[in-house]
Image 1 (tube, helix red, strand yellow):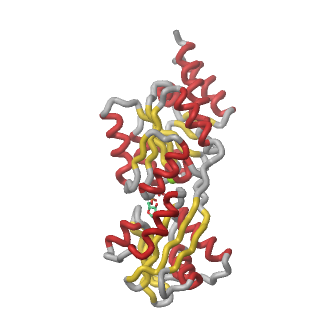
Image 2 (cartoon, rainbow, N blue to C red):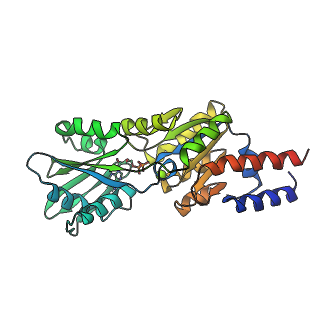
Image 3 (cartoon, rainbow, N blue to C red):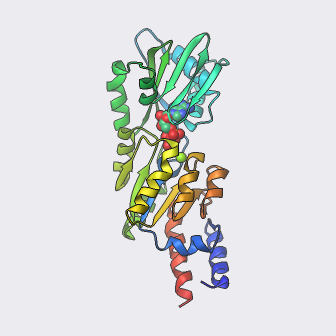
Length: 292
Ligand code: ADP
Ligand code: MG
């Protein structure tokens, strides 16, 4: 495309909340046949809310919330914010935690009130040989509803389960329908549990789901689809997504997400509205048509 047509497209894009980093992003967008999309904060609002507090035998709700909420004050994960806010809203006083440790893609651990607390997904509790069977059925039910389940252990024993729900963005279903109409295959990529991811994916009509992915594996998933011959766009919002955004043929960042994601992407959707991809592709086609 000519510099002039690129300039025009850039200006038009900005007017509709789609920021192009460069000419290459505009040129490549029309050629993609597959969109890999992060779940939390991209398909969903990324503002999870605490929806269930289920203590194990011998534990009570308030104690469980004190242990979990206090520890999560040290984490920057959106799930941590949900637990801290959820505890406070229920009038639970939080204390300062010691020895805070983050287990990337799995959860956190530390000491609260002299108790060793471990909190996160099933993988994390498994790593520490803590049996979650007593709450497995409750976990299954919540996941089936698309909720995320967080296990809590105290001094090496299961203390309870916390359920968190992150609503789907209003604009997501329309974006998926429109992209499908254009023949684009949609793959959900998430660190979340498979059952939770599948419930959300089913509701949205997502074609493929890659769940329980560790942050440093996301780029490899994009690479795998490229090796299969796909032209891949990747949409995401987190620091975790940055390498995958850079690896994709076009990276698409949510303007509502982290700066690192936007710096790694060719396109930024200012309001995090995925229907912007469809508008951006229209511009991409129009711009490239101009030069012929
Ligand atoms: P995602 O945000 O896509 O779910 P992450 O890699 O950030 O991916 O996290 C993967 C999983 O690890 C989360 O779904 C959650 O189960 C668990 N996890 C990570 N950090 C925390 C935390 N601070 N509190 C609770 N759970 C966590
Ligand atoms: Mg995310």
